[in-house]
Structures are given as structure tokens and as C-alpha cells.
Length: 260
Image (tube, rainbow, N blue to C red; front, side, top):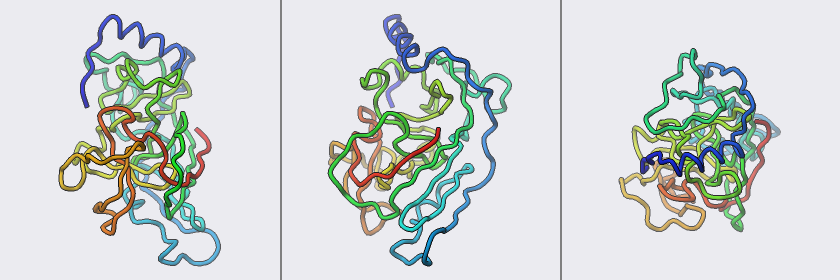
């Protein structure tokens, strides 16, 4: 992702965004991230069949993320605590690090949440629908994925200057999230599975498994093709370096998200 240099004009715009989006209220004391592993259970009526089994990609979710299958719905519960360093942990936390050069830190700190996503285990295409402000999906480390909009429904601009070095920051409610490529997750491979959206379709890094950058993404930032997780092919999203970054819309029937 292109690095942004802080200018006087950008700083003024960012300050305005912080007042609107990030507020000035005191954040809760940061908690240490969960060190438990992902728990996978199957709940609900009849025993799972191959058509309603928990998709294998959910074995890649960790950092305390709880995953269960209820009928044909995947239930994901997360505390939304990143498993990497950030200035937003606050001084004194084991995962605190000083802001990187050019960063303008917003006034909020990371704090544990309780967010539950209920998404289709068998995602299906539907008429495209808008993504919401707030969580639109969840990363494999349990961090919420947000869309490309900042305060006032404008694409991210100077707000990017408040991102830590892994491209995340917290809301005024201390809800840590990524709007753009989570560099902590794509550090090992730009084609890695990043997470899933509320419609159940997976999100991958900016490259496909061949190392190429997809050139046929639709307005939702996705296309249909094979991936290591879906050798038979599936619709999936790819992160890009320009808006909409993660997804411009939902391409499938969406589930629900509560908490935060």
C-alpha cells in the first residue's frame, strides 16, 4: 500500500475527521489479547452432512475466535483484539509500540468487544447490496473488517494517517478494525486468506495464488475462480490498494452482526 506523508493540510483534515469519527471520549483500559485457540463446534438439529459441514477455511481462524455451525449458519464470536503490536494498546501494555513516523494517533485505545457474526455456511450469489458502516466481515485473527468510508460517507483519505503500521485503528467505542489491507495477515503471502464477509464469501489479499494481481474484479471487488481453499472455484473478494480496498458491496445474501 502507498505510504502517505503528513502535510499541514492533511493534518487539519485528519483533525476534523478525528473529531467527527473518533471523538474525544476516554477509551477503556486496553486488555491483553486472548491466547486461546479457535474452538470449533457443531450445534443445532440433525447431524451435519457434507452439504452443511463447517467450511474448511474456518480452521484458519484463531486468536481466540469462537466458531460454531448452527444448521446452515456459521456463528463467529470474537473479542476483536488484534494479535499484533500497535500504539493503540496504550503505554504499559505488552503489545504497545510507539507510533511510526508520519502517524497521527487518534484518541482511542483498543478494548475487548463481544461481536457475533452469523453468516451463510453455503454462500450464494444475490443482487449486490451496500456494505454498512461498522463491521462488514471478520479477519482470520478475529479483527473486524470495515468498508472504505470514513465520517460523512466519504472514502478514506487523511484518516489513513491514523492507521498503525498494520493498517488498523480503533473507533471511539474502542473497536479495533481494518479498512484496508491488514499487513499483519498478508506479510507472509499477498494471496493469503484474510477473512470472510457477512455474505460468507472469502476475502483474499491483493494477489491470487499464482502471484498475479487480478484484473477482472467487479464493482464489489470480487470475481469467481479457484483458490487453494476452493479448488473447484468460488466467488471471492480481493483487497486492492485503492477504494473500495476490501469490498465495494456484498455479492451474496448477507447474514447479521451484533455486539461491539
